[in-house]
Amino acid sequence: RGAVLRSFEKYGRRFAIIVSAMLFGLMHGNFYQIFMAAGIGIILGYLATEYSIKLTIILHMINNTFVELTTQLGSHINENIGNVMSISMIIISFIILIVGIIYKRKSIKEWLQNNKMEKKIMLTFFTSITILIIAAFDIIMVISNIKPV
Image (cartoon, rainbow, N blue to C red; front, side, top):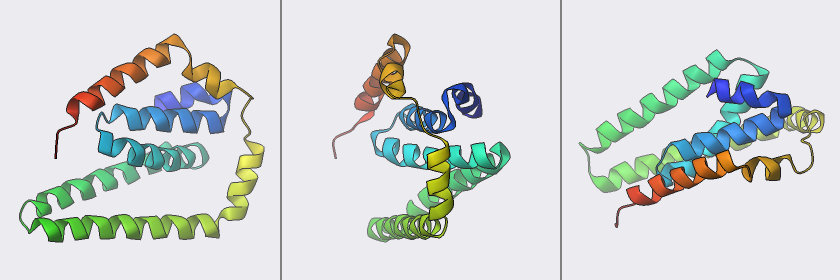
């Protein structure tokens, strides 16, 4: 993921973060993870460009470990309790994110102003044949993995 992020930086940091996050979300191949992974990808992409790729690797490992532990724990407890635990962790994480954004809002606003994207660069990128093929393949994979509830 870091290689993808760095390869797109020549088009601007904001573009690199958004594109790598969207590809990161799609590559999970699971409809339920796409949006969460893309959101986390934006945060990790920002941290990687501004601080360290090592930091984001550690955070990603912590996230995946937590998800795995929750999944394993969930298989040993009542489904409703597992759902409450998962939703609670999502809410707590969201609150921490909002507090962080509010706390850092000035520096985030300054960063956004200093890292503008070229007009139409997203349109040009997402209408390229290579990206259309990758996105179509990923969407087919996601759809084929959706199971009825």
